[in-house]
Image (cartoon, rainbow, N blue to C red; front, side):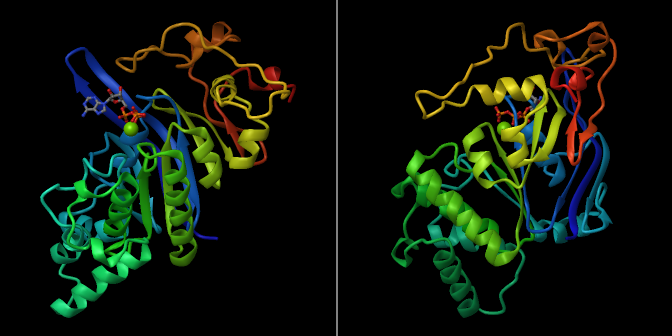
Length: 320
Ligand SMILES: Nc1ncnc2c1ncn2[C@@H]1O[C@H](COP(=O)(O)OP(=O)(O)OP(=O)(O)O)[C@@H](O)[C@H]1O
Ligand SMILES: [Mg+2]
């Protein structure tokens, strides 16, 4: 398998009136081509910022982005335009990312017009119609406006538009969070079928743990701009090692009434991402924090084969 995307010590800081906000603070990971990396964590932990920095929708503060072996950390304007064909995004709320005055066929076809990828009108119309088939949109809605359609169909438009330039990599930022549960499953299945057919590589951002379990090969857990745990999706749900991940997963509702399950309620305040103090960002809320946790930052370390955790106490807590 080949690595399609790698980020090294990626950082994005925002200047605010109160100081520097460390939204993404030294993130490292790689994704193999054709795979899905799930990114989970509470609201405000930096998931969307991470996705946007990788796509150059936001400029990084530091670190490296390597795509298909090429360092694309600071691409030229013309290279960035080319890269946009390969690297796309599907947004959380399909309606807000779509111009409500455009018809469905125009929304889907617009990227092909901007990039002049079709030689004739006939080729353009054929491509739009094929894309509608691909994402399961009936041809009769081609002349509809997005507000006339339900959320599931609107997200299908967003997916078709993201596919229009035949990308290799897509950042999916909460793509099903605004949808009813039954529609969520349809869209997730569509995205998985498209991945199989086209060999697509996804970063799948969500705060919904059931969704991320379903779709990811590997999962990163983020806490205030940093990765605290990273491993195979099955391993994470079976054998999570970081105290924050344990608390996060304990909040998933269980279906079996007799299942032994204790919810871990996090106490203490969420640390501010503005001018963060040294030490583990999770320490103020951690039940097991020791003195050293407040003094130095734990690095993401491989504690078991292909299972990375950033916690000073990981061995002690898990009897490793
Ligand atoms: N343009 C900006 N200027 C200043 N701060 C920002 C900006 N964009 C994001 N932030 C801050 O960066 C941090 C990370 O935000 P981000 O939107 O990436 O979080 P998220 O994990 O995607 O949250 P959610 O689950 O709510 O979508 C937050 O503290 C947010 O307030
Ligand atoms: Mg977000």
